[in-house]
Image (cartoon, rainbow, N blue to C red; front, top):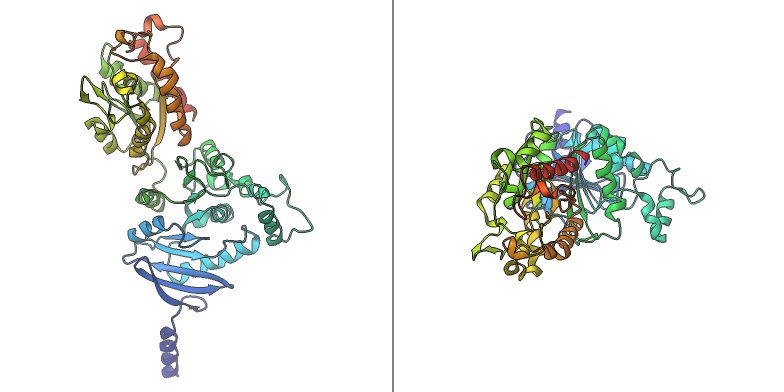
Length: 472
C-alpha cells in the first residue's frame, strides 16, 4: 500500500502535478522572463504562475487578469525584485459574475498551491483595469494595491463601439434586459468609494491623449474619489500618449510603490516633504531675510508641522537647457540644488521657473522650452516618492521695458511662456498655480525692484501656493 502511494506520487510529480491542501493542479512547465513558469487550466480558463529566482519573504505576487505578456516591462521589473507573476484569463468577460467567481477560485488555488501572500497586487491594463477594480470592490481584503494602466472605469464608455456594447450585453446575459446608466450598480465607476475607504493604494498610469478610455472620464474619476477620502493614490500621465503603449519608460519607478504597499507603509508617515524649485524669487532675492522671509519659509509656517518645506531655489536659473546669465550656463536641471532636491525625494514639488527664460538671449532658444520643461518634470515624477507636482505660472514683471529688469520681458512671459507652461501642465495633468496676478492691488508694496518680491510679496506667493496645496 505504501509502495503504491509512493509510486503514484512520483508519477504525479513527473507529470507536473502539484499537491496542496486541496485538489491537484496539473501544470506544464516553461520559462518566462528568465524564470520558471507553470501554466495550467482552471475552469476552462488559462492560468499561469511565474516563480522568481529569489522570491521575497512572504511570497508577494502580481495578478494580471488580462493581456499577459503585453507591455511586460513592469512585470519584469517586479519579477526581478522577487515577486511572483500570475495570470488568469478574464480578458473578454467585462467582470461579469462568472468571471469574478472563477477569479476567486483561481485566487484560492494559487495562494494555496504556491503559498502566496493573501493580498495580491492587481495589475490591470485597459479592460484588465476594470476587472482589477471590480475585484478590489468585491474582495477588498484580498488586494494589496492596484496598478491601473489606462483603465476602463466606466463601462458605459463602451457604448461608443456597438460591437463592444453588444458583447457586454451577451456576456452579462442582458440581451433582453438592456444595461442602463444609473441602474447598473455593478459599474466600477459607481463603487470607487469601496477601495478608497479600504485605503487600497492606487498607482494610476494614463495616456494624456487616450481616446479609447479618456483619462477625464475614467482614471481621473479614481483620483477625484481617492482624494475625497484622503486615500493613497499616485497618478502619472504620459504626455501626448494614446491608449497604447502601456507601461512606463522607467518601469523600475513602480517597484518602490509596490514594496511600500506590500509592507503596509503606503500611508504617509511623518511630515509631508515639499521641495520648492525655482529661480531668484524662490531663493528669496529681494526679501529682508531669505532664510525666514522667502516664500518657502513663509509656506512652512502656513502649512505647519505636518509639512517640511525646503528651499531649492537658484538665482538666474532657467527651464531651457541652453539658458545662461552673462554667458554662464544656468539650466536648473544641471544645478547642485536640483540634485539635492532629487535626493530629498519629496512628496510634493513646487516648480516655479520661466522668468529668466524670457530674456532675449535665452528666448532665442524658446522653441526648446516645452521639451526642456518636460525634462525637468520627468526628472522628478519618477522619483521613488512619485511626488505630486505643481506648476507655477511666472510672476508678473512690473514694467514693460526689459532693460529695467535685467532683460526679463513681460510680453514674452505673458504671451509666449505662460501658454507653453499651461500646455505642458495640461499634457501631464498637473495642477497649475497662477502667480502672475498674485500681487494685484498691492503692487506698490510687493516689489523691491521690478521683479523680486518684498517680504509682503513673498507672503502673497506663499499664501497662493498654500491655498492650492491644501485645497487639492
